Each structure stands twice: as C-alpha cells, then as structure tokens.
Length: 107
Image 1 (cartoon, rainbow, N blue to C red):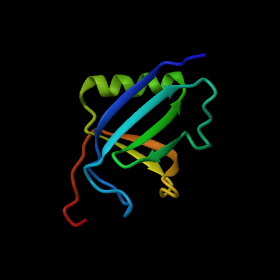
Image 2 (spheres, rainbow, N blue to C red):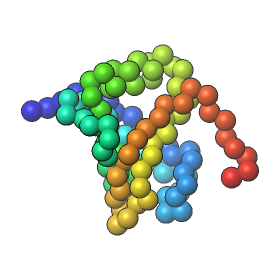
Image 3 (cartoon, rainbow, N blue to C red):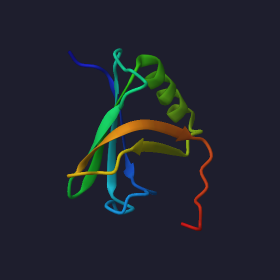
C-alpha cells in the first residue's frame, strides 16, 4: 500500500552537529501515516557522501497543515530535531516550521 508524501529538497543552512557540513544537500520526505504516535520517534536520517536523506511520518492532519503552511509562503525555515548521527544514521524526534528566522551571528 502506498501513502502520499511531501518531498522537499534544499541545502543545509544550520546545524549543531560537527559531523555535517553546512551547504550539504538535504532531501526530506514527509509521509502520511494514520498510525503516527506523537510520543515516539517520527522518522530517521541517513547520510551518504553527497546528501542527507530524512524520512518523517505524520498523520494526515499534521501533513495537511505542514503542506498548507509551506504553500502560504510564510515559512522561512524547517527545523528538525533528532539524535546525533551514529554510523551515518539517526532518529528524528520532531520538526518545527518557523515563520520568522534570524541567523544568530554569535555562532
């Protein structure tokens, strides 16, 4: 059975990880999943030589909301929270869509 998904490609603009370089290609796929449980990990991250691939599962209502926010053009950044990459993979625990994004010059 196939579920609809939302695909986003961009370049990484900020990270707290020392293992990932700014500017690497990022491919995010957000899948619709009726069995999504908010208290557990919602996805995984894989890193290869040329890109980082992220797969996120959200229920229909959240996926629809994310899609509408992105279509509105008001979102400036998607922030994804996960564990540190270990052996080129990690878990995604959450995501946040920021409407206002200001780069902190002190980093």
